[in-house]
Structures are given as structure tokens and as C-alpha cells.
Amino acid sequence: MPLRALVAAVIYAASFLAAYRYYVHPTFDYTHYEFRGDRPLATLTGFLLAVLPALASRARAAGKAPAMVGAALIYAVCYVPTELMLVHMIEHDDGDVFALQLVLALCMTAVFLAARTGYRGEGPNDGGRLASTVAAATVAGTAALFVTFRDHLRIVSFADVYDLRGETADIGAGMGIGYLSMWLPYAFVPYLLARWLLDRTRTGSLAIALVGCLLMYASTGSKAALLLPLILIGLNAVLTSRWDAASAILGSLTVVVVLIVALFPDEGALMWIKSILLMRIFATSGWTFATYYDYFENNGYTYYTHIGPINAVTGAYPYGEYSMGQLIGVEYNGTDEVNYNAGFWASDGVGALGLAGLPLVTVALCLVLWTINRFASGYSSRFVTLWLCGFWLALLNVPLTTALLSGGGLLVLFGLWAARGPPPPPQETLEKRRQDG
Image (cartoon, rainbow, N blue to C red; front, side, top):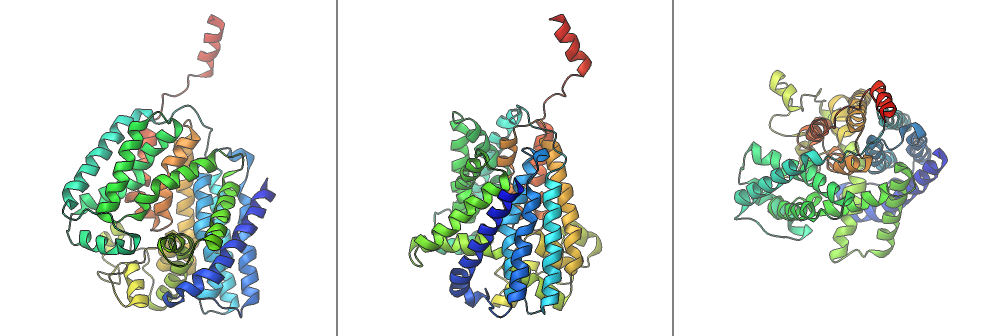
């Protein structure tokens, strides 16, 4: 019921706000995670607008639409933190803050509504037609990474992961290896893990996926690749629960936030897990949205020239060799070696066109969600949802076009199209078969 989703949203938002106030802000205040206690009205409206879109997250007609899980993840990881942090992160008057909060709330509601459309129901197809192709591509891609980075392969702690990334970045492996290092964790490995989670006897898929995840971390320092098996196992548990996707995800993340704040220390190995989950995963979306909003409002919008094909045609990108994330790195860290990538609302929204960019990129995302539901019709809903997990992770951290190209979104859609089963026979044929016997 919608009320369940609303209650789950209220509890989750309150849990995140408390974690931000008492852990993220005091621990990472030096990196501009600010907290202001002098704006009670904006804080209240932000909280209300953070939870209200959850009412649009549940509809019986949506059934098991795979796009609903993506919308729920966007809501939990991107939207709620952004709405709650805006009042603390930007120095505009309450009226400007409210306008930004309201437009974001309308955009999130539209995302939920779009995620409920286009789905025609699930079927028995589990993508088995692609199994040998994806397995071979994963093995070949893993081997290519091994050969390319063989002199730098090593398992490092999360504290040293950026040193490893710097070393491998200096190799200059080329565009092909760059795309491959993204497609493996975001498209190929999730497919193999999804197949294994649907049928635990497929141990070959699991072995290939685990080796690939380990090598991707050892070669490129991808924390997402290392954590991918755990993320998919957790998502699978959510999908097999009796709750709707939004309520189950919000309830699970609330438990995670509360337990981490209460039980994990602020030092030692567990400190890294605590900081990664609370700051890097949950709070970064709000931080990047606020910093992109301030920076590009003051220095000039990109007008979508940050998108590679558009800049290739126009040559109008105003910031030279610096990416949008590097500009934020220079502004807040004094170096272009730090690249603060941001999700679609920050990069394709306020960074590209200010407040007006938010509805534009939301419309584009809604079309993607509708397409996902249409292409997923006739498949096992759980399989498609798990396969798309990598794409959702990318979408939360990079522009929409980058998530579609580098993040494997288009590859997954093409795979769904290629592995679709034959169309069902016409109703007349079914009736004739029944009559014949």
C-alpha cells in the first residue's frame, strides 16, 4: 500500500538526517559537508518534500516492473539525501531553496510514475540465449585487463585504492580498455551473477563473475566491482521479500544506516566501510548536487556540451580539458586530479542548464525507464532487475548518457532485445490447438 511506502520513507529520511548530522558532517566537515541549524522552515519543507514522492512508488498495475527498482534506488540514494542536504549546502534564501526542492520533488514523482508504465508482465525467459556469449565476453575482457595491467595488479586496502587508480591511469590503455573496464562490472558480471542467483547450480557463472570482480579491483581499483556480488545478493533478498520494491529497499537501507552508525567504530578497518556507505554512497549525491548547482550558476552552464557527441559537433564546451567533475575538484580541493563525477540531476540538470535542466533530464530518464519496462516484458522480472543493477549504480554517479554508453545501459537493452523469445502465437492458433486436442 502507498501508506507503507510513505512510512518507510519517513523513517529512512529521519535515519539519514540523523546520520548526516551526527556522523557525516562532523567527520567530513573539512570537505565541505556542512550543517546549518538556523533554517528550520527550509529544513521542514525539505523533509516533507523528501518523503511525499514515495506515495507514487506503489501501484498494483506496475506489478514487478524492473524500472521500479531503479526508481526506488534513485529515490533512496540520490533524491532523499539531496533534498535533505540542500538547506545546509547552498547559501540562497529560503525561497530559492524551496523552489529547487519543489522542482526536484516533482521530478522524482515523475520518475516513479514513468517506472510504472510500459511493462506487459513477466515470463519464463531468463536470458539463457546469451549465456555462452556473455561468459565468453567476460573471460576475454578479464584476460585483456590482466594483460594490460599485469605489472600493476595488486589487492590494496580502500585507503590505497586511489594510488592504484593513478598508476593504472598513467598506462594510457586506450578507449577500448576504458570501455571494457566499465562494461565488465556494469553489464557482463551482473548478468552472470543474476543467472546464478536464479539457479544456484550455475556455479560456472559465479566463478567467472567472482574472478572478474577480483581482477577489476586489482587492476583499476574499482570498489564497485569488488562489492558487486554483495550488492546483488542484497538486492536479490529485497526482490524475494513480500514488500514492494520501494518499501523493501527503504526498509533495508534504514537498517543498514542505523546499524552502521550505532555499531561501527570511527577508526580501523570498519571505519572505511562506515565512511564508504554513509558518506560515499548516501551523502555524495547531495554534496555533488549542491556544489554543481553553486559552481555552474556562478561560472556558466555547459548547455549539454559536456556530452561528448554534442561537443564533438559544436566544440562549444566552455571549460577546455577539464571535465565537470575536475572543475569541482579544482574548486574544492585545489587539484584537477580529483574528479567529482555526479549523477544525472547534478550534471545533466543543474550543471547543464540550472533549474530548468532538471525537468529536461527527468523527461529523458522517464523515456529510458519506459523502454526498460517494454524490453523487459516476457522476461523473469527478478533476472532483469538484477542484471540492471550495474546500470543503476552507474546512473547514480555519472550523467545519463555516460550511464547508457559506458555504464552498460544500452548493452543491457540490446541484450534483452537479442535474447527475447519468439512472439506468442495468435489467439486463434491457441483456440485451434485446444480444439485439436
